[in-house]
Image 1 (tube, rainbow, N blue to C red):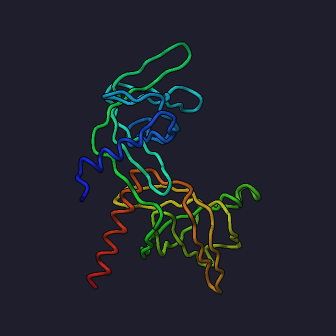
Image 2: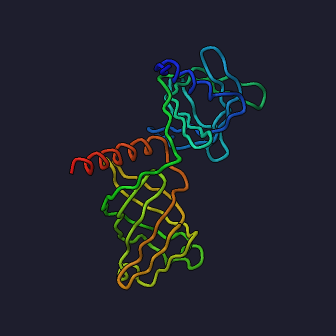
Length: 229
């Protein structure tokens, strides 16, 4: 028997259970960002989350504010579109109640399809900044392929100017996708030093749900284009 859309939706919704941890992702406004949270209660029409904190202070919350609740379960990432319903305060603790707006999305993370991109990017070697303050700086590089799990960039030796890479190095990438600018952190996973350039594979530390969707769309478009060629 094939599953209906309602059955799939119900399966995803059941992933929200008391004790599940994840992140609240706010994609616009002054408090745009990603905040740790956990599910404290599940009601008939709303979910109670531990109140998000920003720099050790409670995040300003208002009724009907929209956000994404992002959680991982094994090899899958689940994204729930939510809207704040109310806030309950009991003594020193607070609970943010929110209702679900749309069907949750499930993003498979076991397999990361890698496609060519040839993006002009900027990279910043965090390890050098730690070990040699003021030595590291943003450097122009070329992303040669990308997936939802990471990317590979090429940095010519002239722009490297003595910079070296090793497995496990922390690296920032600044790039543009769909006319918006993003910055992601990651760690070196594969290092190749050629005569004229470094080729460095980087695994993302984490990717905001909103950006992961855009990456998926880009990767899918590239995959379809290659099939048509």
